[in-house]
Amino acid sequence: MLQKSHNLEKLHQAGVIAVIRATSSAEAIAITEAVIKGGITGIELTFTVPQATDVIAQLNHKYHNPQITIGAGTVLDAVSARLAIIAGAEFIVSPTFNVEVAKICNLYQIPYTPGCQTVTEMQTALENGVDLIKLFPGAITGPSMVKAVLAPLPQLNIMPTGGVKLSNLAEWFAAGVVAVGAGSNLLQPAAQGDLAGVTANAQKYVAELASIRKRA
Image (tube, rainbow, N blue to C red; front, side):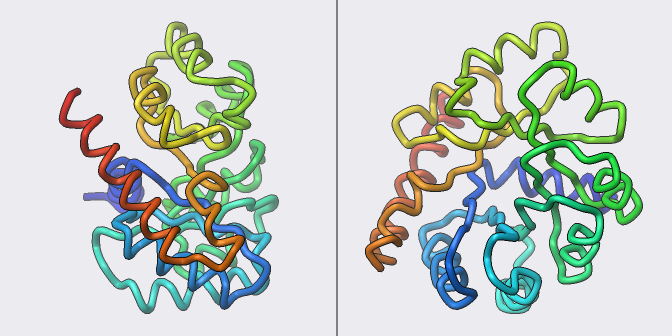
């Protein structure tokens, strides 16, 4: 399987992508380990984490597992995207669409998932080789937006981030998304240093996703 297609399939299989934000590299690694322990196999390590590229490299070295995919999030420019890719990122996520980031990702055959909110932004992303759209902020648009944009653009693959909760996971997938990005709701216990709570949350998300897919 071609590299880009392979990485996209790993994202699809993961279903739930944990969006990791932390105030230190050590904290980011600890949270990631807790999430993976809970069964989540998709990790988006944001560039707001100090020494993000070093963390990505460390995680790739530790979790050299064909089922686990580790990418970079909050990537705002092509330089950051290239650094992340060199560190081992298997996908790149941005809060907005950036044509230069799209070009560098296409050059290295790495999936680029830009944040889009309007149909115009989504079409522009598609025209520049984007295969997976990040509907962002999901808390503002909601699952109804997915149904609305899939009507004129049924070829879209959508992953919402923001506003994704355990309680509405089924609603998002019923609307037609291929994966979701889960951040604060999933990782909330980490704010109190409760990594076991993060693992427990991850297990609940994985169980809910399995149930959703079984019913589909």
